[in-house]
Image 1 (cartoon, helix red, strand yellow):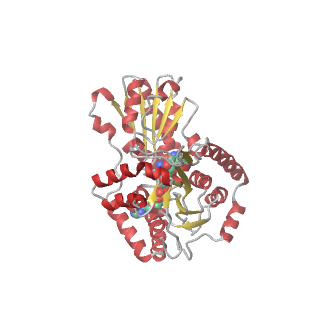
Image 2 (image 1 turned 120 degrees about the horizontal axis):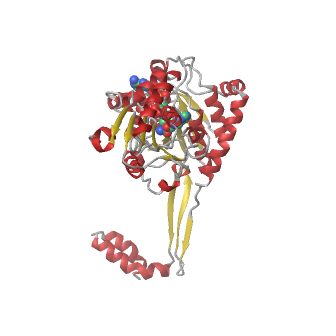
Image 3 (image 1 turned 90 degrees about the vertical axis):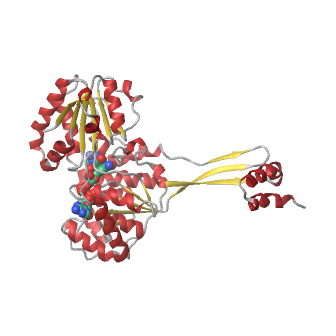
Length: 424
Ligand SMILES: NC(=O)c1ccc[n+]([C@@H]2O[C@H](COP(=O)([O-])OP(=O)(O)OC[C@H]3O[C@@H](n4cnc5c(N)ncnc54)[C@H](O)[C@@H]3O)[C@@H](O)[C@H]2O)c1
Ligand SMILES: N[C@H](CO)Cc1c[nH]c[nH+]1
Ligand SMILES: [Zn+2]
């Protein structure tokens, strides 16, 4: 049963506490990373057996496997992912930035170049569900940025294959190579490289607590996008909302993971009770009942606030991955939102729209990291270089300033590297 809190009456730490990851996740992940670093492919094959129940003879998906899989995919599904891909492309195309050049009258030229990353690893979750949508959400912005090589890695199913729908999305999204490896071991392979898996410059994509922890641990050796861990939804709703819709939206994220979190913040004690009852009504019909049940019981919350302004403040403090503002005038509240990965406005904007179709990215910061992280975007797949050009006359005009600055730092060689050009 979900817990209902009255905001004014309770200890705030109970509200702001996040779900605890499994015990020893840090040590487990550190051990797996060290093993993959040392033993390469052999460790990946061993973990595929241990965690995914798959006996692998090769780690990479072959062109033949890809072709066979594509033939087996439902043609209606192919049409759907093509429509979704078009929406995702249209949205992310607006994120493409070009460099700039600043020229001054004295001949100085300054500028910034934007360069795509060379090789990117995309983690596609596949433990308890399969996520072709994640393939599109990660490969499309990488492609638009101009990444040269996109490596997808995802857990194999027990028969040693990759779900054909994932392969179809990988083909559509422009993935260059696909590997059968999941969890912390896949992240380690992308960070260090193995005999089969080439090391990536950056690892992107969401995953469970093991994947999120592994990305934290390899950060520095490679770049990572963000902590995109177990899914979260926070719904702000008033008494004009349908309890049925609100409960359905909460369950849509609860079903991802026992560690997922679904929260309702409302100014109506009546809606709070109704949504609590509605969750109980809808839960038993879900095929992923056990996961959603555990998520709602352990991490679900309904918070009754004094008014909707306070509801937005509570949401800002929680910094959820997804925020739904289910009221009649949602745009009235948009400016007050400070921390949220992706915001869904109005009563006909269930979060699943964003998971699959609308266009904005669904790889989003979790665990309160929306305070400082952004949704995955084209920006994640580029880096910048700046450039500077000075004429002799322009350098002469600033030589004394630079020499003065360098000497104040005690760096005589810096000063001389400028003045030497004018010593004769
Ligand atoms: N934040 C986002 O943008 C976003 C998007 C999509 C999905 N998600 C999240 O991705 C996650 C998907 O999780 P999943 O589990 O289905 O797939 P997953 O691919 O993330 O994890 C499966 C792998 O976890 C590893 N693992 C499982 N138990 C382990 C253990 N005890 N010790 C070591 N490793 C272990 C195994 O290697 C397994 O292959 C969910 O939490 C979902 O909420 C987040
Ligand atoms: N809600 C997930 C992000 O937290 C994304 C997703 C993919 N498929 C379904 N949902
Ligand atoms: Zn989802």
